[in-house]
Amino acid sequence: MSNIIKPGEDEVGFTKPLYAPIKRRSFFMYAGATAGITALALAGCNDDSDNTSMPNMVDVGSSSLGVLNYAYALEQLEAGFYTSLREGTYYKGLASGTAEKQILDDLYYHEVIHREFFKAALGTNAIKALEPDFSAIDFNSRASVLGAAKTFEDLGVAAYNGAGRYIATDATGLQYLVIAGKIVSVEARHASLIRDLVLEGSFVDSDVVTIGTNGLEISKTPTEVVAAANQYLKEGSKLNVSNLV
Image (cartoon, rainbow, N blue to C red; front, side, top):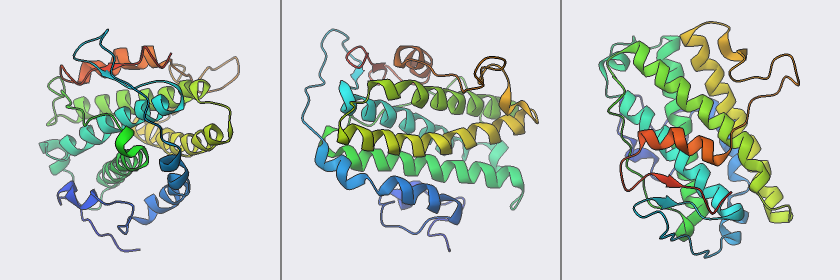
């Protein structure tokens, strides 16, 4: 399948990802997710998510809709990171066709697709576009970039794993859960790829998998996740999940 967007092009080409041809690697993941978009959009409600108890913070809301906005916020952060990564000298210095550059390209495409999927699914119920703060990341340094990518990918997987309990158990909620399961499986592949770039074979380390007990991936509550995520968001874009939990 040919690409509509080539490496180096502006991400404007993804403003309508639901209709655009995408990379073959992205197709199978995306096809599964888009199968539920109509149900998500129709099931949206107009919950009042304006919380004045935490001024200048973005309230993701409550119940299943809150979980979707929570996921959308994290996908915004990841997509923003990979977009910024492509402007640094580390990425630009990677030779075309190398495995490392191809991995980073694929992760960029996936995260932008995830972000736009949630934005479209939520419609008027979506939280605002968040402003990231990546000033702590040196995008000219391989170690800094891959270290940050590892943090974001591990955090994303733990966030999805921990958010399922907040989704309603009705028919619509189960649709949400299936879609979240499809996306987290992709995020887990991202995490393993980045971890192998940092240190080969580290994708099953004890900081992400409960080795010796049940062998499952570690999950984190929304409160734990936003404590980390908010470090990479500007004032006015930091997340409030108090109504979710």
